[in-house]
Image (cartoon, rainbow, N blue to C red):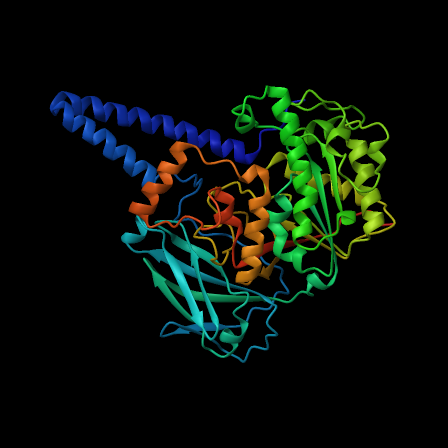
Length: 477
């Protein structure tokens, strides 16, 4: 069964259509240059145009940087009045902050002319707090900064904001008070090996009790392994076994015992087909397998799906139910159903919610994360170690409640090392991508991550991890 066309796919299709039109216009310009200018001048124009594209126009940004983000927070959210005075953020009334609140500041931000070529950012400083948060080039709209971790400086009126390549005004503040979920039993649902680490390493590594459940082996896209001389099927099986091992071994780095990690071994990008036909086994696209047990062999305990190894939706639900009853998690962390468009992530969330229907154990809290976005492939923008702004959202009807976990430098480095152990993040980037990053470093001021070449080292090793409070599924017993 074919998968439905997602909003992300529609945006990519529109982007490619515009790109083809742009290439046609560029070709016409080059033809005119070839007629009017010497050959070397035409070649120079072509090279400079390509360099400009790679340095400044290669981002997948599927909205105008002039668009306002349109967030709707819960009606009972605390919203203290604040003002800016000489670059300092002051509250109208004294703030009673403990220090672990999620604090969000909305600002109208407008880039300067240099901010069209160099990423604009705001520097946050005060007391022991120091951070910077980055925005789209050419930004001219409402954006949301994450001040979590800066409570003491904010309460004392010492938090200073300074714009670089941008200016800002009209501050609005929200304070969200949640329990410290690190003090509860946490279960992280990862559609693929590395999703738990990308989204929630800081949360689960600091949790008093954590479980990591990975749904698929991630055995597809094996070009790196085929380059070693392996055949297509052999490469897929090797990659699946490696990533299955990663999903169980890397959490040990964070102190999670192997008896609290599970790899379910279902096949990558096949969850939607399984969901559409719950009793029908859905084989791997690339590994020539219709049995999940090859990728479940490292588990330290049996699961219902081990009986026949059938890659079916019903087996997936049975595995999840058994794990939830065994672990009794107070907090379940899973992909956000609307913010993260990856098909396996959408199905992972749906599977957990279906598994919870009528189950004797129910979590107190469900948190959603987004490792992918519809609208901006570069989010979170900026460099490794920076804070994470709220992502672009343009649906004012959707009510969202953020929950932010702060990571100090030691936690960030441990997270970077955990990601470095993941085999899928180890292959070198293609030459074209490395060249693009070099041009962006030289011409646009972008910094590479010190932790690794894969883009996720820049995006995931940050001062914050960001989650969203989700409503518990209906149908509790």
